[in-house]
Image (tube, rainbow, N blue to C red; front, side):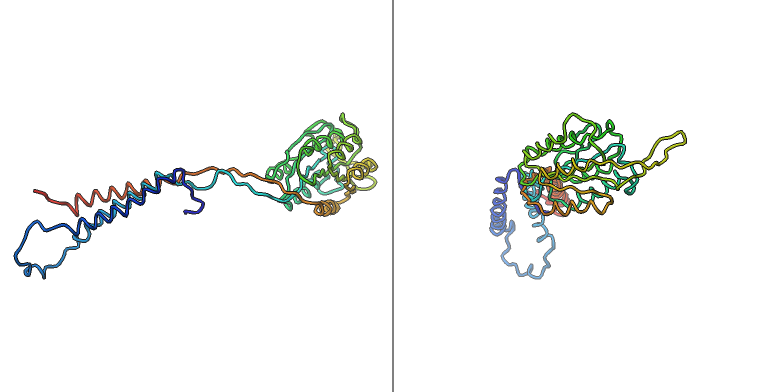
Amino acid sequence: MFENIEFAHPAWLWGLLVIPLIILWYVLRHKCQEASVRFSDLADFAELPKSWKIYGRHLLFVLQMLAMALLIVAIARPQSSATNQKSNVEGIDIVLAQDVSGSMLARDLKPDRLGASKNVASDFVKGRPGDRMGLVIFSGESFTQVPLTTDHGVMLDMLKELKSGLIEDGTAIGDGLATSINRLKDSEAVSKVVILLTDGLNNAGSVDPYTASEMAKLFGIRVYTIGVGSLGTAPFPVQTPFGVQFQQMKVEIDEKLLRTIADETGGKYFRATSNKKLDEIYQEIDKLERSKIEVTEFRRLQEEYYPLVAIALALLLLEFLLRKTVFRTITA
């Protein structure tokens, strides 16, 4: 109950020192009290039993002191938790640049290319709790879905909701890479990485992929490129008058471009023809040098004096009732 408790006004706790002085005064006062009636001989009273009320009357004083102590502590305002907590975690900054074009719905990977990429990426995020991560999606254009964050719950939620058709169709590899670089260029991490997944040729966007590669090299960003798709042909969903049907279409991936981007930036190119192939890139990233990132967690303060005040008032009420009933004094 008292773990991580601090006081807003700790100086009031010095008031607790008054309580021992009051107790001392109370003891001395009762020792000095004299009987109001004097007898020449007390022998006749020696055998009389002493009532429990003689000792019980001191209970009133005990209740008063307990209530006073609780009220002093309450005035000092005990609070739980802390305003913020800083910690250092070791990791690297990683941006996942995910192709969400219509061709990512091809069924040569299970359940399809996009679904397989999402599943493996989610496992990757879960396995690296110390890294800051971001998510960029691209098709005919690109935008940031999740900026760099240590909140991996947000990353997992966004990956889960990712689907094709969110933006204009096409494959703007240069735009996707440029947007990812923009998220990493101001990072102070020693290792900055982009994992770019695509399944097509660069046929849209305003940024040339080779120019984006030079930008990545300039900012010290490693780019791991993954060409997603089987060799040869793959079943693509096609809308027909009879509904969606699958047709075998040629798989076209600009492997020369992806390999050049990876080589120029110190990364590596992978051809992912299955989900298992994607694991290779994660093993490579694990070998990267890690950097320290300062994380500040903000927490809300909670006042803890309410129960103390309630208990103190209850004790004072009990003392009042006992004084007016059980320990009632009759005065002339």
